[in-house]
Image (cartoon, rainbow, N blue to C red; front, top):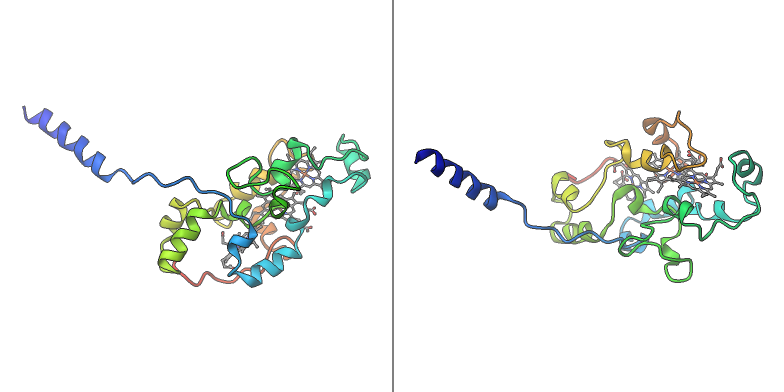
Length: 188
Ligand code: HEC
Ligand code: HEC
Ligand code: HEC
C-alpha cells in the first residue's frame, strides 16, 4: 500500500508546515506609530489627516451638489462616508465615533499600512531585521507595490468623487497627500 503511505505522509507534512494562526491585527492609531516622527509631522499636515472636515455641512458645497449629495447635510456620522474618511471604521480598535475614538478620525497611517498591532509586536521583537513576508503576515500593506491599497478608496464605486483617472504611481508623487518617502532602511 505504497500509494496510501504517500498520501498519509503528504498530509502529515502539510499539517506540520501550516502557519501558526496569527492573532488578528487590531488598529492602534497614529499614536501607536509615534517613533516615526517625521512621517507623523508630514501626515498631520496632509490631506489624509483632514478627511473628516469634508463631511461637515457646507464644506465643498458646490462639489457635493454636483455629486448628487446634500451640501448642507452633516455626513460626519454617516456610515456610508466614514469607512473611507476614518481609520478602521467599525473594525477592532478602529473609529467608532468622534467622542469615543477621536484619534481615529481621518485616513491614518494604518489605512495605507494596515492595522498595526501585530506589526508593532514584530517590530519590537526584531527591530528592523524582519522580512517583508513577515511584515505582510502581520497585516502590513504596501501601497507602492499593490495599487489596491489606494484604489480601495480612490476607485471604489461608493466614492462619490472617484476619479477613474486616479493613478497610484502618479498620486504617490503628491507630497500634500501623506508624507515624504525615504528609502526603507530595513529589509522590510
Ligand atoms: C469608497 C471610499 C469613499 C466613500 C464611501 C466616500 N468617500 Fe469621500 N472621498 C474619497 C476619496 C478617495 C476622496 C478623494 C477624491 C478622489 O476620489 O480622488 C474623497 C473626497 C471627498 C470630498 C472632497 C471632494 C473634492 O473634490 O474636493 C468630499 C466633500 C467627500 N469625499 C465627501 C464624502 C461624503 C459626504 C461621503 C458619503 C456620502 C463620502 N465622501 C464617501 C473616498 C470615499
Ligand atoms: C496615503 C497613504 C499613506 C499614509 C496615510 C501613510 N503612509 Fe507611510 N508610506 C506610504 C507608502 C506608499 C510608503 C512606501 C512603502 C509602501 O509601499 O508601503 C510609505 C512608507 C512609510 C515608511 C517607510 C519609510 C519611508 O518613509 O519611506 C514609514 C516608516 C511610514 N510610511 C510611516 C507612516 C506613518 C507613521 C504614518 C502615519 C503618521 C504613515 N506612514 C501614513 C503611504 C502612506
Ligand atoms: C481610507 C481611504 C483612503 C486610502 C486607503 C487612500 N486615500 Fe488618498 N484620499 C482619501 C480621501 C478621503 C482624500 C480626500 C482628501 C481631501 O480632498 O482633502 C484623499 C486624497 C488623496 C490625494 C489628494 C491630496 C491633495 O489634496 O492634493 C492624493 C494624491 C491621495 N489621496 C493619494 C493616495 C495614495 C497614493 C494612497 C495609497 C498609498 C491613498 N491615497 C490611499 C482617502 C484614501
